[in-house]
Amino acid sequence: MIVVTGAAGFIGSYLTGKLNQLGYEDLILVDKFNDPLKISNYISKTYTRLIDRDDFFKWLENNHAQVQHIIHLGARTDTIGQEEEIYTQLNLEYSKQIWNSCIRFDLPLIYASSASTYGNGELGFDDRHSLTSRFKPLNYYAQSKHDFDLWALEEKQAPRFWVGLKFFNVFGPNEYHKGRMASVVYQAFQRISETGEMTLFRSHHPDYADGEQARDFIYVEDVAQVILHFMNKQTSSGIYNVGTGVARSFLDLTQCVFRAMNVKEQIRFVDTPADIRNNYQYYTCAKTDKLRQAGYNKPFTALENAIEEYINAFLRAEFCY
Image 1 (cartoon, helix red, strand yellow):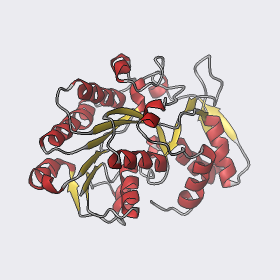
Image 2 (cartoon, helix red, strand yellow):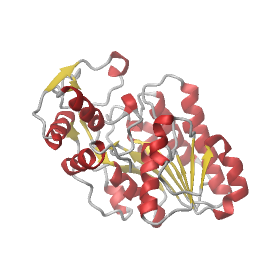
Image 3 (cartoon, one colour):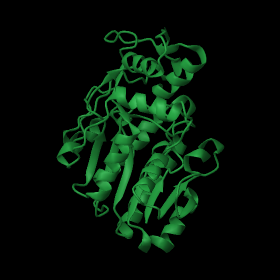
Image 4 (tube, one colour):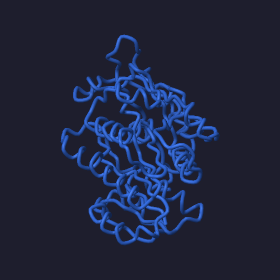
């Protein structure tokens, strides 16, 4: 039996589909299953039970002997929210409870951290534990993820195996419900479909031209493969970057979307919204040495190929994985 928290969300539901594809059907899906926009993410999945996140620990108390893995992907993921106490409750305190339950019941733990914990990137994107305390996150979401990473590293007791995965900019099927927080690939497809053009943020940084802000974009299929690697090969516990190790500009990405859609390129630039301008990351790129040393040796999907598949196999078909 495998527990997946955040199972109605983007990465959690995709991972659930991947587990089903591999023959895993004894799944416990944990989330708040009250958002109608997320129903398509799990309605067709095979699982043993859906459990409200508020009821999960009571259920685990009575059923832990059946569980083999906990994959904790549930979180408040909105990067512009201002309710600090909600991020603390859901991303920090809930995760601490998961951690302690894994110790108590001798269960391995895989949990989602975030590349947003690196802040503006002035210290690089290196996942060595010795650097973690020096990072300065830029919003409440990132701070809550960072706080849990720090707490986990400082704890004297730990699950028998655990990994925290710092996801970089993930895109792909099942993010349809995310609205403003959806990937630029998704937003570009929607906007180009409606208007024939795409808008990108102007640069407000002297070192970057408009559209040249860059991210380490990673396809959700690759993220799922990394999770499965650590689920099946419990090598070295710790925190790992999950990115491709290659930064691509938003302009480059948007041009890939136009090509995949076979639409003539029309791109214009608008000011970055004031509410995110001061906390905007201009560059992210994962250092992947540690992940490779942990035995993950699969190549990452090229951005062009990932966008082509996402658009033509999923977005055009309005299909969830």
